[in-house]
Every structure is written in structure tokens, then in C-alpha cells.
Length: 470
Image (cartoon, rainbow, N blue to C red; front, side, top):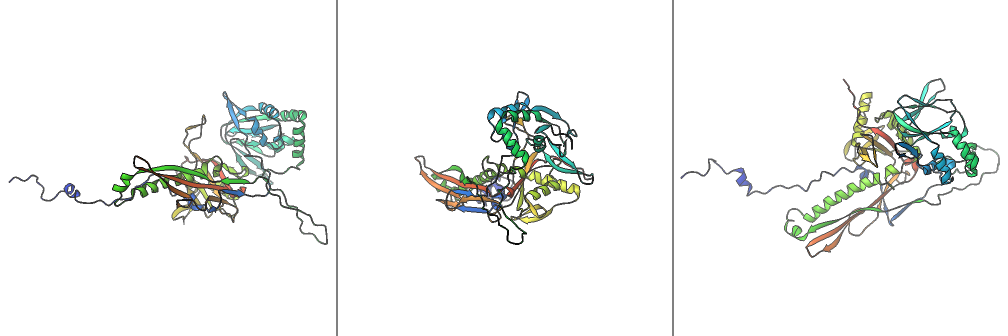
């Protein structure tokens, strides 16, 4: 009898028909560690509203003057001139007149935009580019004050008071600016009594600094029996309230799939787990980037820092630490920004210490961990709102967290119906005539910054610079 095959034993393919497989749970590429959700202290709300009561402060806005492109020329947005303290109550016609007085100026790297000691006869608004303010120190040495970028302006105080420019401004990159002559402001003040009165208050120094709290009248170091000042602490009339926001979807599972194919693996449970992962990923992205409550959109003007050279350096992170110096908790950055920071540290011979936080080894700087998140905004050069963002730029947050430390907190309801995880519900919506069962999946959340100095951001961080260490 002729054998059917030359094999001397049972083939693996044939044996496979009698064997079972060891199966994994469904794997998901988009799942991340979500360090932010793990690092934030969460406040459980019995109601759906979280009201942040603060002392009364004087806040103008974002300390930026917006511009737009009219044809090929940049123009100031008139309404945003209310960033100038004495123009807050000016009417629209006055703002439009002053906006039209700005003219375009282009500059190159190294160009002097304003010289220390010269009359401050022009107000500069940086449309695009980066420049640095430098001043001569007590012993003639040159000192760097700060780096300014898109939307920032200088020098309002000297321009308004017709004083000398207190520092030198030198361009770091090519760019474009809009400038207004001092005579345009003088003409506006001569014609409008409201503007003139507000300018006089500003020039006299009797107005409050934007962002400052209303002072409490106290005395100290006195002797004898002087009359003590009487005071009270004023509160904001309209404290900010945070309402629960949400991420939602409807999960559909066919009853036949659940009934027949849920032997070793519960099909409904696995579908729910993967959906929960997606909801949590969306939650973290919203906490960072939502235009109303996202952390990147809630940084106070004085808490924004520009990089010195583009790449994130130890100096830049030290500047952030100087802004959030009261018990800083962690930096939050895109993984590429952390890698770029590591390269800059290697270049300087100061490698950052690695420490175990949240169950993973993380780089630290000055003992503060650099927490990675791919939800941090990162520009890939795609066109956005008609303009092309710089390729390879991002931002780095530094924050203090916790209610007790007046920091950043996460918000979620104390309890929701059909809760499967804190703040996340899975509600059975019934089975339709096709045998499909629907589940309403909802995650409720928000975040709040209790005081302005709880968070700071390093802007215009470039991550594409590499060095030859040989």
C-alpha cells in the first residue's frame, strides 16, 4: 500500500485542529498611561457645579494683542486693544482709530528694535517672531530680562508716559511687528475725555496692577497706641463656576454575539472596556485642550514663558519653577519635548535624574518629574485656521495640584447611576427589534485652577534640534 504522504508523524497543521489557543484580551494601540488623570487629585462633587471663590483681583485679559491678515498685511484687532489698561472703557470708534495707526515693520535676527535710553515714541506689537529684552546691569554687564513672542507688546509704560525705553529689545528670529507712534495716542486722548482720564490714572500709578489682589490694609512694627487700620477682605462678585462636562457614546452589542461567543471571554465586557479606554483618552485630551476649561487655555498672562533659544533648556524649566515655586508637583510635556530637554541636558553635561513615579521611570528636573502625554499640543506644520504653524513646536506645563495647596484639581460627580468607574456610567438602553443591545457610555469630568500661580506654561518649544556630541 502506497503511503499518502512521506511524513513520519502527525503534522502541526493537522494537530492544530484538535488544539485550543491561549487568547489575550483585545489590545488597543491608542491606549496611553494617562498620567494626568492619575496625577490629578479628584474632587467628588455632590452637585454638578464647582464654584471657585477668590479674593477680588484686577485682570485685564491674556496680555496679548491679536492681529489678523488683511490681504497680505497684518492688522490689529481693534477690540483687543482693551488689553491696554486705560482703553478698557473706550468706545469702538476710538479703538478702531488707534488700530489704524499701526504700521507694519519687518525685522531680521540681531536687529535692534528698541535701544535702552532712547525715547519710547512707538508701541511695538510682535505679530510673528521672537525677541529678547536686555538691560545694562549695575556694573555694566548685560542682563536678560525675558523673551517675548507672538502677540506680546512693549513698552506700554514708557510709551504712555513719554519716558525713555528701560531696556534694549533685540530680535532673535526673523519676524513682523506692528508699531504705533506716540502722537496717535496723544490725539486720541485730546479728543476723548474717558481715555484722557484713564491715562492720567495710569500715569499717576494709582491704578492697580493687572492680576493683583485688592490689598488688605494692615500695619506692623508700630509702638505705642496708634489708631489701627480697619479693613476687610473683598471677594469676587462673580466667582467662576465649573460645570460637569462629558464625553459620551452609545455602545452596541448584538445579543447573538454576547450569547454565543462569550464562553472564555465576555464579549460585552470587552467591548465596554475598550470603549472606556477611548472615553478616558478623550477625557485627558479635553482637560488639556478644551477652549473653555482646558489647562493650556487657563494660564494667566504673567505665567507664560517664552523659550530662550527654542529648544527646552534647563534655564527654561528653571524659569517655570520660578513662576510655580509654591510646591510644584510636575511638568507635563509631549514625549518629544522631554526627549529634546534630555538632549539639551546632555549637551550641557547635566543629565537629569530618573526617578520612579506613577509606577514608571520618569526624568526629573530639580526633583520635579517630567510627565509625558501625547495630548499636549504639538505642531506638525499642517495648516490651521488658514496659517501654517511652525513645524516641531509644542508647550510644556508646570502645575501645583490639590485643594489644600490652592492648585489644580480634577472634578467629577461623587456618584452617578450605573457607575462602572468613578464618574463613568454604563446605562442599558434596551434591546431593539434587531436583537442589538445599546449601552449609553458617559464620562463626567472637568478641571479647575484654584489660583493663577498654580500653573505656568513654556511656549514655542522646538523639538527638532539635535547635537553632535563627538
